[in-house]
Length: 586
Ligand code: M6R
Image 1 (cartoon, protein in one colour):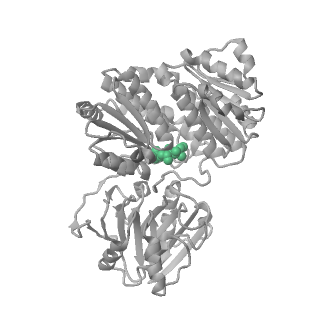
Image 2 (tube, protein in one colour):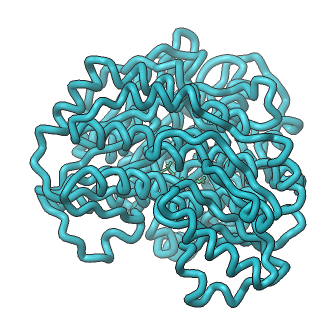
């Protein structure tokens, strides 16, 4: 993970800090920046969230050249020593790195033998120590050849007016504005500074100043690249009156649906849908990680109902160990909000190498996954800042619903229009009261059948990632095969029941829990009778939409339940511990 930014221009400190705020979703274990002015460096570092860095920084309006980094720790603990930028032994070169250097131990041993001293434990410091020489293109090329692994690098020297860079597997973009030049892990850093940006490809390296960008390809040939237009619509910097981005983003699910309805009527998308239909495939794979995998499970349930072919839903980091039958007749749909998830990217390369038809469903059209796919379907959710994915999940499911409907030859606009009118975010008072109760427990179970079991998995992930309460999801019918042994009065069980055909069976499983003292909560879109109402300690009822949209309707209240529980426990739901928004390491 980690985010890097480099800036050449005036007000370097404050502009780098703004960039770090925009990149904080990539990690918030520590942050730092180094600025070069008058052939000397000034460095600021702090552990913890980016805000901790602010009080250390001395603003300076003068022209300068700077690099900055926000860290998600991989190698080495969270400490000032391991905080970027890292320095060459002679102190004249500083660099920031996103990625993992796989052969760093070997390189480090060699450098130690040559008498180099290491102040920290990171793989990134090893790269810095390889730069005990003049910073120029030849030396960058020489160092780059030694590195095995993933890297986005921005490097400055006390003696140069350029920022040097190199990219392999980790994302990296450059922008030239009218008064400044920038490099960053994410083009959102360029908003307000430039109108366009250049996307770097794997193996590319070079240098840039305020006036020029020089890029070499992986064969050491100079390449000319045209900037693409920066789309300003994805930025989401204000909480707009909400206490946290997570709550704002849950409510933005409706906006995402509206945007999808607009975009998926456009000529461009219709052409993409036609292209999809023209492929010949006899199997479908839906692949993602975490919440995106759960969206794949929902999409898979739509596709399995619609088509008479095999549909598989796979966790990206596991797909290569399963010896699956992936070939040119396999439609492989990769789902990723960020479009940069390393596990999903690796799975994409694996499926591509086997001849699979590669399609992406992402929220970031400039991302690596979107670019590597033959067709990218945007989810139009707008930037998602909270680490817990909410509106993106909702939008991913909607787009997978559209792909299914289109391939089946069904209209998708009218059902979506009807659903839009029925969206129900649940009753805050009941959800807050329930959250206050849940906050007092140290484990929570979720159960459901069919699609409700998928929702149970997503609701459980949401709760555990932001409240740190242990939680697991089980298919209702599976409880009695073992897990019921864990049920007693210390365990609340959240029952999700939105399918009328499965309602009674699920209720019976709920009664089995009740008989063993477990506390019961029901999340439903269905009518309940007095006997059911007596059995449950809480019932959260939301409006009943059409069957395919039940999982999307009910997840909104479950997302809010996780949110209110985290807030009750005093945690920041936007920045849960140990996590980052964009997981760019395997
Ligand atoms: O950017 P992606 O959709 O590829 O990310 C996948 C997962 O890392 C992500 O969904 C993660 O599980 C979220 N923190 C869940 O809220």
